[in-house]
Structure formats: C-alpha cells, structure tokens
Image (cartoon, rainbow, N blue to C red; front, side, top):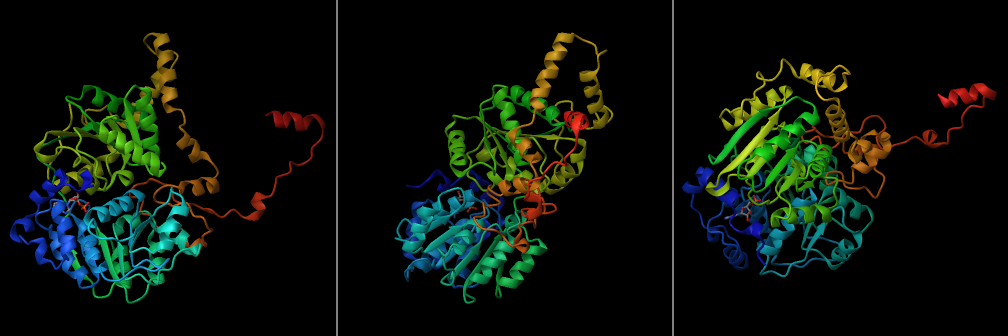
Length: 526
Ligand code: AMP
C-alpha cells in the first residue's frame, strides 16, 4: 500500500517551485541507471522527474562511489539513496547476522520513515529490511537479524547494543549511509558513528547526508570517506507567500507566554489545527498539560515518549481527533505531518533554518496559513537571524512589539509578581486569591520538572531513554559518553560532573553521627 507520505506531497511541490535546477535539468528517472524493478516502483509512487539531489546522487551511489550530500529533508534525499541501494541489492543474498547495507538515522521516527521508503520503493523486490530502534523489544529485532538483512536501518545506540550482545556482525556491510549527520552531531552521536565506522569493512561505500556542513561533520567525512563526490542542493531559505507571519512580544516567564498563546489560539481566525513548537522537550510536556487543563484538545510529541505513544499521537493528529500538537523540533523534524492551518512558535527557534522548517508546515499548495511566534526580549538576536535568512521583516502581531512592552521584562515580571503577592494590591481580593491559586497550579512542577531536580546520576540515566539517547543496555566507558552536543535543541541537559558514574563510596549507606539526648531531637526537628 502506498502511504500518504510518498504521494507527491504539497511540501514537495513547494520545494519544486523553489528549485531552479529543476527546470534547467529535466532529467528522467530512466536516465539514471536504475533497474527496471525500481523504475516501476517509482512510477507507481507517481514521481515524474528526479529531484536535483536524486539526479545528482543516484548515478554516484550506483557506481559505488562515496558521496557527501548537503541536502535537507523535503528535497527527496531519502529516495536518492534508497533507489540506487535497491538496484544494487538485486544481486546477492544476505547471511545471518551480517547485514549487507546499513543506514544510520538520528531518531526513531526518521528510521521508521526510511523503512517505509523501502516498503514503497522496494515493492517489486523481495528484500529483508530490519529496523533497529530503541523503545521496542530486542527479541523481534534479533529474529530479523538472524534471518539475514539486506538492509539494516538503525539508530546508533540500539545498533551498538545489538553489536555488543553479539547479535550482529558489521563486516559484511557493503554500503553505509549516515543520514542527517548534523543532527547526529547535535545529539552527541558522533563518537558512536566513529566507532561504527571502524567496525565496517574498509572496502565499503560510504554516503553522508547532512543539511549543513559544520566543521565536525567535514572532519568526520575527511576521516571516513574516500574521494567523495560532493553534492549540494540549496536549503530552503524562503517562506511561502501564502503564510501570514507575525511576532508577538511577551515577557520571559513561561506563564506569561502560556497566557499569550491561549489568547492567540482563542482569537485565531479559521483555526482548523495547529502545531505549537517549543525548543525544549520539558516545555512541550508542560505546555501540553497546561493546554489540556484549559480545555484545549492537544497532544504532545517529544523525545521522552515511547515509540508507540508518539505514533498514536501523530495518528490522532492526522485523523483530526486532536487539533493541537505541541512538539519539539527533534520529534517533529522530517515527519510528514499533514498541512496545518496554524503554526505557533512558543519559543523562537535558536537556529534560523528551523524557523523555515517549522512554519513550512502551514500555507502549503497555495492555501492560506498563519505562523505566529512568541518572542521575548532576549530572543531579538534569533529574530534578527531569522529575518536575515528569509530576507524579510516579520511584522508585529496586533499592537505588540518589544518597545510597546512595559519598560523591561524584568520590571514587567517584578510588577506582576508584586501585584500577586502584595497585600495592598487593588481589585477584588477573592478574585486575586483565585488567580494566585490558578497561577501557582499552572507553575506547579510537572513530572518533567521534578525529574530535573533528581540527583544527577539518576536523571542522566533516564534522560537517555529518549530518541537521542537510546537506553544503553551496557555500561559505557567514559570516553564514549555522548556529550558532544551543541545544544541546538536543548532537549536534554548535558552531563555535568560525574555523569553516569557514581563512585562506590557515594553509594554506601550514610550513618548519622551519634548524638545525645535532647539536642539531637531539636536538631532533627529543624
Ligand atoms: P524526503 O526529502 O526524502 O523526505 O522527501 C520529501 C517528499 O518528497 C516525500 O514525501 C517523497 O515522497 C517526495 N518525493 C521524493 N522524490 C520525489 C520525486 N522525484 N517526485 C515527487 N515527489 C518526490
């Protein structure tokens, strides 16, 4: 069955319209050297012409060259490596526990989407595709590996878990793909990738895809790719004209932002469904709870959720059962979420490109869309970067602007705090008490925040159960700690101090010093 993701999507139409190369090089899929089985599947998927990244990458991948591709999700890059891989895999058979090809993805969702690509593009093949991702049982994955996999799609953590359990040999891998390499870097997966590269046979073909090319990725490519063909397609840097954008000024307190967001939702015209983006996953969880408490029909998508609930939430949003989805970039990136009427940025993204990605979820295929971003004073540098990237000024929504706000945020916060706490405050006292209670409840610690206060060691171990930090079934030597993060998504806290390692002396029970009589009692009572 062809899933909606693989139909000629609206996002894709927009990309096509943006791409100049598209019109200049009208190549055909049949010019690229793909097998007839693959060509038939491409035709069944309804694709007429290869995208620029496909036209450039497919011939190189087919001729077993190393490729360094600079391209983002939405450019058709998945097919640019899956189609030639399928052609190459037509000869040969897999052996037990020795996959023939390996694709690394940074998140479970992206890995699952690539698996779907193989289902669609490989509909005329009889290939075994194994998906090794966290959050699901090892047993079924082991069974698949035992049968022999033509294609292994994995997240780095789970792959290494299987390897260390002796369930997997990597010396039969012929083609190795690292997708979204810059994302891997953000998530601290680079040490794992280096380790995996060293477990692969030196004669393999290596393909790296990355949306950007930071120096860390470039040096990784220098280390592990041999004479790569460098291919680049322009990142989306413009926004659809059908999107009405706006900035809404807010104080920096989360409750202020939440109140503004509720107003925006309540006063939005023709809101059918909306995605609300937060920069941090714990804010996703807090906001999601707050919105539901206020009677909104919201779901959440963040890295701490298990795979089943993420997929269930996404399905409910797609079917219209939920009309608001609160999400982090990590959880939402690359997902084929249907077009929405409204996008709200609860936080302004710290990377300008993320803004383009986020608001690109609305205003597709000529339809009207609205994208409103809540910004605090300290966001002004991010706002500048966004406006520079999209080459336009985003107007202030309503009569808000930083300058229209009370003198400064700090003042603003103080005065509000003052009025809430002041006994001499004006207005109905009863109302004020009720409001105090509401505000307090709103700001009560969520489970995520409680989690934040746990002792470091315990928290860090649990944090790794999300999509970035796969739950390790094995102790990691300290040098392999995945701490190489640039904090782009700030979904997790970096490990400070001892990290996972708790010295034995700290685990020994603490005996209180013996003291005498009354004094001891009064001390303990304090
Ligand atoms: P990707 O960048 O791989 O996530 O692909 C983005 C979207 O473009 C997916 O929904 C694909 O199904 C679609 N797509 C990929 N290649 C083509 C093509 N040559 N023609 C039309 N749609 C395509």
